Image 1 (spheres, rainbow, N blue to C red):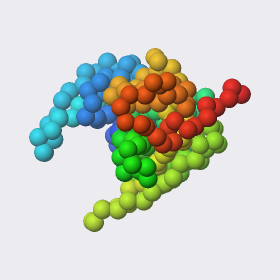
Image 2: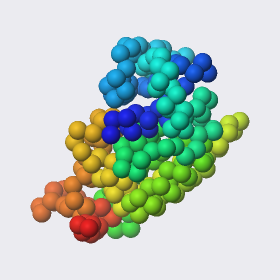
Image 3: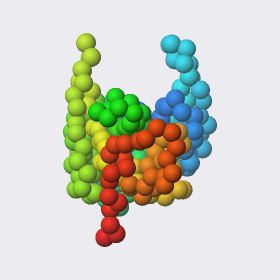
Image 4: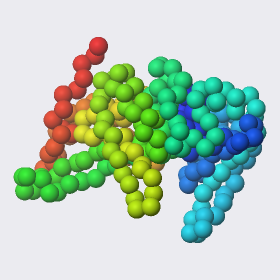
Length: 231
């Protein structure tokens, strides 16, 4: 579970140097770097680095020929961002791998929409997204998740002037809830705490809602989904 999660992190925010020995991982979340270190038993300390715009990133770099070669065998590579494709990830650990990808280059977006068709109602929206510069990589993840748990996502193409395309795999509405319940299968599973905190309210059985609502009436897909039956 820990290794599959770490592979997801390395596939998104990690780097394999060209010397076939050194690896690195960078994130703006210090706790995510520490989680990677624990999962891969990295003893090298992380350090803070300043960005040109005055921000702070956290980076760990270490050397391991054995781990480097193993990650190559899994499907990672140097300068991978636009070349990445399908990786060797056992199906039993794909949820952990995808959770790592989301913690690296993904998002859990939750917001309240008050512009619905019925005045006075509050609609809660949820989207789970993964961004990548490699279309084969996001298509492989999309088709694998659909095969494993029957949830279909959509891939969107985005282009900024002067830049190459960026691809976003997005899950919305009921699909995003099923994704979250699948990847956060265990309270002890390694994850980025701030993203799990956003997902926490959706991890209870689908369709649940307080018997005594407080404030404005709430409406929308969240409260109209039948919980999946065992088996």
